[in-house]
Length: 501
Image (cartoon, rainbow, N blue to C red; front, side, top):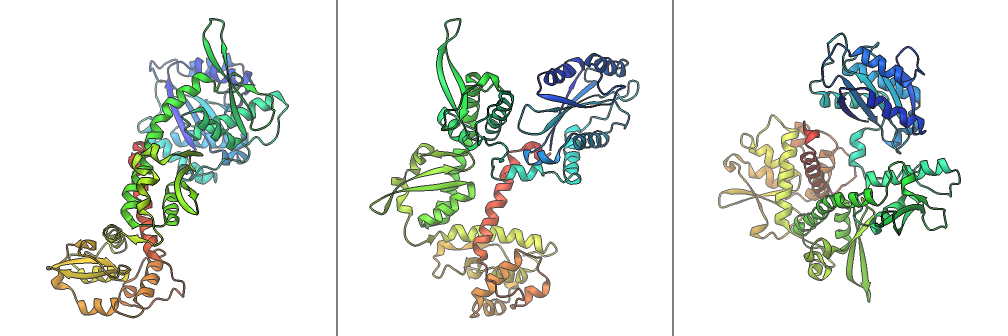
């Protein structure tokens, strides 16, 4: 649930806006706390104006919209929406007898309501509106849990899946129903995807069973224009004019969206380019086409190969977030297959410098999380044993401690990751007995499986035996995936300053 709040001096425009929606059949009034729930709009305006007459503030009325994910539509009848509204207003600081009016809108695919209420509580007193955004955000999270609604965080972080109720699967003959269903479907695409051209827009509209057709015409002033009409994809459906739909997605609006979406496209292409160069190609000196596919899937990119005589000759990217294809060279000329094909082979050749540095970084953070009372400088033996149990074999070179992952059998000098730690306090006999044991590899797998499931006790640290059974999980790649997810979360937070407040 997302709340949008605005403040105005005059209540009349707010009431008239919502009542106009009601008259057009795009909304309904579901509650008015005045004398008569069916009161005329002028009665409502007079009631609210009377309530705020003693205040000279410029922000004495509040307009709130509560927006819910479409997944919650079946849970939200009018009674439930009213219950949520009352809870929200009470938690915001209004009393139970405070006047308010609620409208349920049907002009978008997402369930949402509009609340109009005076901010003046008694006489000239006004509701506390300090830190209103943060307070409202906290309240909506509480209400999501209380009413078992979809958590906003899960909607933002998940790959979009078009709701079944949105998709147009059969020809619609009822004019009003067709207008409503087409409006919802088009609105869903415009809110969740970022087309920059008609071809991309049509590719995304296919997800909801629609397509857009254009026709050139000259208006009454002699100006050449392009008309937009929407129809079911692939059949001779009677098109419906863009101006008929709720959000009027015609040439003017779509061209404006194409232009604004270019900024998103630049960021998305940069994300793909940086991920391939700074993560995938940095992680492997040589990799297979299958591994490349698996890595790109982490950022929702599907790799499609073109073969010639049974050999890969080219590739393209399909963006599962946007439902469009990218030509790699259009993202960066260096990404054309001719420029990167030397990175591919039949066997994997890891860049162990990257792997060792990454693993030391991730395991160091994990160590601090599991053992906040420990310190690698005060208890280096405990720290080194932890690293060794996670497959990082310690070694001393020129008086400095360094680590190499056990899977790198013949490390080069440049492969190691160095760590500043007092080596004079280390008991290398204990460490050597562990890393040279015949079952060291299986113990690493078991330990990494355990570390991903539960906090480790001191006894577990000292024991080489584990009681978690026979399941062996390759924790090496799990930990690297953990690093990728962690970094992605940090990046998302830094790109959303409001969320960090």
